[in-house]
Length: 458
Image (tube, rainbow, N blue to C red; front, side, top):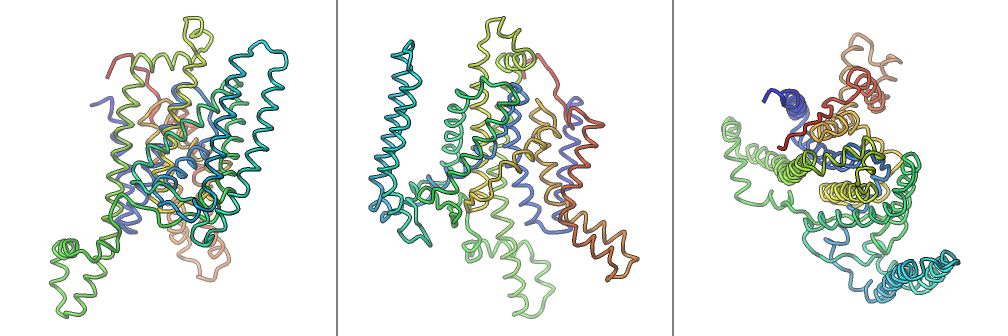
């Protein structure tokens, strides 16, 4: 227990901070922060597996997150029959052509290994294939996007339960990671970082501009939920009776029947939002706990020790007969799959898919800050970093506003300095995160909960 004392202390402080938000702001806001902290924790575990276990720099996190979000649309949204009738055949034909190109290229690589003009032949196949796909797909895309573009204008999905999309999101991200890994993992670390960042930009750009796939920047709203809707709870007798029972003491103090009814209605509305967020918290917490158990088991297993050995000295590990490239590809796929899962969870929590919000050049580095602040190579540290940075990211504005009002209470409301500081409060998040990161790097250079090498099995 004593060796976990710092972990228990750190997580206790985070829980106290979230509870204080619930007390001084609202429990709905506190649970929203907690849910996003849990989603951030999943993302940081994925990034930590790649960087902390194997030393791989992946700046393409937002690309895999976007693929996870896309999976939610393609799995849970009902299909659009009119769109399928208008251009579905063209898109299926295009998909077959893509698979055909992949198979032909693979055949050339295997059959004609020593062919002098092999690369030119592959390039010719790809260029001809792209032209053919464009000719087939263009009419279908125009027809699909013309079908009621205000509401649909895309093919829709499979109409399946949304929780299934979490698995599919991980598989989508894993598939892309396999392709990227095959191409880019042989690059030097700095080139790998640039390549993954650019690939993420390409993925996000495709999702934003291909309206037939997921409406592009028009967004997809009203996605399914794995938990009840607030409006349904507000009309459910069992929920109304539960809220009334829990607030019986407060309601008994009110003598007016109409006033009591109005207050009960407001309590039901507030409680429905809290109940829905609690249900989401339960789902997200389950995922985090399962991933934590699996990643901890993996970290201290022979495989985990092998990955750390490769991370610390690739040449020595290779000399011992370890297939470094194969292991790097595996860890790259695993970490990306977890990030894709987190992307699906985030869209499920929001209830909408907004491709324009995926900005690799900005949010990728927020995830990396979470990993570095928490402690690279330590799963508990990665999760804590996700909690701490996201909490500060959300609450920096309210905290800054409180401090500004406190220290300028003696100044007149029209004072130029006070007005300027209050208007600048939303931007204090960048200052506070920057200062916090500098302080942590100065006094805790290995993170809040640094990596501990333990050769014993857990």
